[in-house]
Length: 182
Image (cartoon, rainbow, N blue to C red):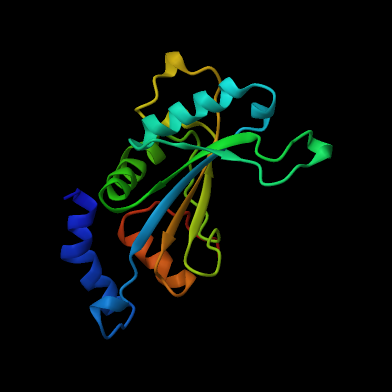
């Protein structure tokens, strides 16, 4: 069992139950899945860039990434339907908690000039999204072998009913949020 999952089962869930005034342990919010997405705009011209992005995501997560394809043609951007444009991974269960542990404790502290994550990045249903400008903050990526620094989007989907519940859940996992100025 991963360290964060064990901590959630032993302490975090009971703390959240009392903090959020919940009656049942089944009402306590949980993390359902984590989605990593890397869009490659130049991938329409060179498919090797998408293969490289797919390799990077596979290294970062430990799970094979899939190529994402365009749903419809957009002539202004010279995109045809079915053309590969990026890569994505959906993490669940044990791998998800291991990735979250590495993200919070290793990768996020390596971000240059980091002042905390924006706590306004929730979507209204308890899901939190943020972007990372460089994939090289992850220690799995060998700095010498990358061809280009790329960014990626990370979405953490929770079972929380509101943004405040999801914020409390992520804060209990020690997610570094920026302090709000009053």
